[in-house]
Image 1: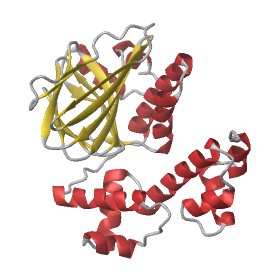
Image 2: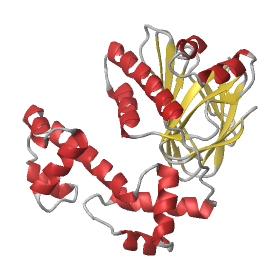
Image 3: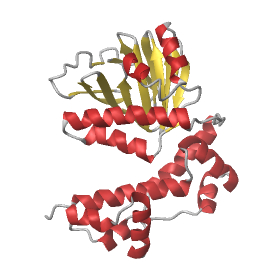
Length: 318
């Protein structure tokens, strides 16, 4: 994979030769309009890339893969806009994903004053062919690939749920290659299952202004996890009625503002509890916005299926 900035002619970021025994390759570069951190690794028959972009101005990055590639693309943070030869203009909202094929990968990725975080897996055609007996709809997709035609697995991008995002996090954070490979395969299988069994069927037809408002709502929620916003407060902040807010937010992120806040609160709580025993359950509860630890414990157990005490006991003592 090679990344080139259009506005910085001396900037080239390359991750082309990822040897199986060389471990993870990390590349980073800064230029006038932003910063790119790229992590790349090959594990047996799979390759994956984790790319983080810190935009400081309007620019475009040209991403080149020198051979035909089937890519599972998932936006982990921010909105990803790209133009791919044969596939046209593509937009991946946060949590959005799809499986794409192009015989010539030359994608123009728009960057802006924001953080963008994207995860990509290169999937061999043989792996998809093996899974056709479980997912018959894959046959049409693989047939197009065999004809060497650019195509998308799903007409509409799908929305990653908590389980899929967790699997991707495990790929990124797990240190052992054997575990990474297990999680990579799990991500692919689960993404196919979400796409084939629960496909998104409606296009989120929103203007750029409406989309911007939904990202503002998301940022308000995540930047103040200890605060519980009512839908009325959120709607007034972005000047949109409550019903439209709920509808548009779900279109983009696949869940309601309250569900997103709960998800992020539980993730933050799990992080605090598993990091150190210096945090009591009550302190963690208050940090993520719960007045009573009983309410927090009930919500945590409903979300994860086990009590917060389980993580607290396993945390290192400093």
